[in-house]
Image (tube, rainbow, N blue to C red):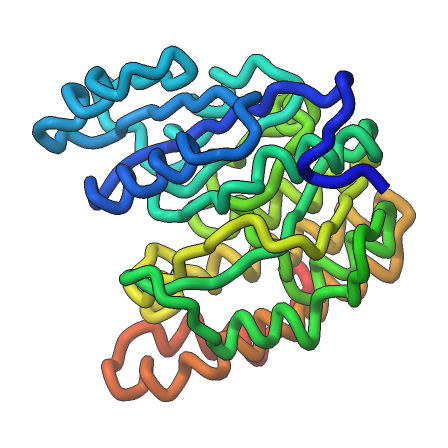
Length: 307
């Protein structure tokens, strides 16, 4: 097996794109984690969707021609900026790095090595460490469920594809989206659905799997995923809007999976048990705050069939 520090000559330069909006210090830490890579075969593109003072000047002072920075003239929003970043990728592989996450120094070398062994794979998932706002490693119920209940058991590297992969992801999305390395041509062909605000990552993944893309999981830890209680997905879970979006997504996906000839994936999407359980855990908070009770209740107890 090729090691992360010995990619072959066919391993590509990695495009790392960062849609940025928010905390300046966390963004700068994310950029420094790219600069600190053991493997120099990367290019970073940061697209700033904000207006924070001093950011353009900070990038100008980095002095590394592998770093590109631009600021949007108007705010594009989450999905719009993600799609703009994606359009700027030019190399064979691309990473959509969260502006508050961190690459460990071995990340680029690892994904280049995985690519060398599995050049046809559409998606690469390295091992992930979950951290809090201060950078300390943490364990949360969500992440323990990902690892212990939904994620497959991996020793070394594991290649997954087809309906089995679709079923696995629709049972419970165990991937860490900002840590994934994508085949650029494949992800650019799909892009992020403009009508989705929270669940667009799973929608993109499922569509790529439906189109025949495979996933390689490598157990080597190479990424730090920052878990924030105040994230967009947490807020929308609390007020119920996440589950209105999720319910429609699973209904539509069940229909697409059935049309594609994947009945097991269609059934899992229609039942969406893990999403219902998540909504159920939010109900007590919604009842206390008297907000989001209706969407949560409909998601938990609805049939999952198109009305």
